[in-house]
Length: 113
Image (cartoon, rainbow, N blue to C red; front, side):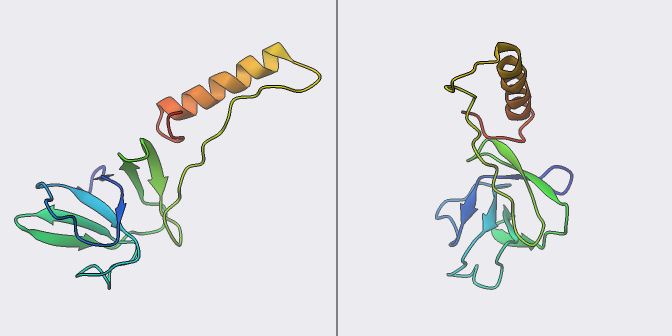
């Protein structure tokens, strides 16, 4: 869990049927999660274990298929559209931008389209 945390997504309440090792980012918080806003809730040995994030901490979010970082709250990667339209088309620039966006998506820094 601490080497490369992977979260299933965000939740404000404990999931009804967690699997061992499942982790979630707590948002809102109720039904036992109310004092754990922004913490990671991980199901281990039949109980929830909470981890307080530190500035710069990264997790991989399966629901977004992207990496997230903590800094006063969890980042949420934005979807970036590929360039299209316009009165002047620069094919080489669009190809370069397409490659940059594709690389960021494949590396997990942007969600997959």
